[in-house]
Amino acid sequence: MRKIVVINGHPDPLSFNAAIAQSYIQSASDAGSEVRYIAIGSLDFNPNLAHGYRQRMELEPDLAEALDAIRWSDHQVWIHPLWWLGMPAIMKGFFDRAFLPGIVFKSNKGSLSKGLLKGRTGRIITTAGDLSENVYEDEYSSSGLIQLQKGILEYCGVDSIQNTFIGPLYELNDGDRKKWLEEIASIAGTDVFASV
Image 1 (tube, one colour):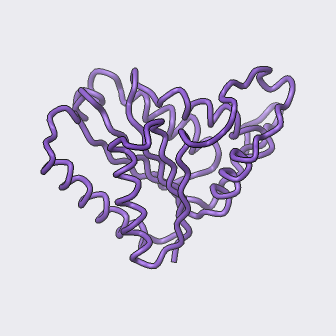
Image 2 (cartoon, helix red, strand yellow):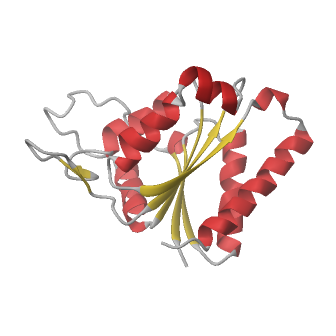
């Protein structure tokens, strides 16, 4: 069975993103996978990479533990709301602070960097308050997805990344949200049995 890490980038523990995470975790666990959960909003860390790469900041224990879970996994599930066509600030701060050279990628002067998370697959689940998937794709060229999928995860070696878009949330009633949570549970079951 797969080793799955579910990472929730929404800072609110009562958000629909948290419900999505729990639905995925329950289904994947029921199917026999080992699952670890990271709620970025509950981690204790400074999201500001104050010195850039000039001076290394020590990783807080919560960041070190989160990185251990990410490296332990063979499948990553990233869940986040779309805010200003990107991820919430706390999630971006997580990447800035934790996804560092020598930890998730290796810089090679004069050639392409090498991703150190090779051998892992991924899924991105994005929620949007007032955007449909068509508008996101047609008007905004899926900019947030490109940042996360290509600019971060694939750059660090994660491949075979699947995407799920849920929105606009303001149009969803309780029944719609329940159907989406059932769909997420089904997706988790598919992920568990996908080839690694």
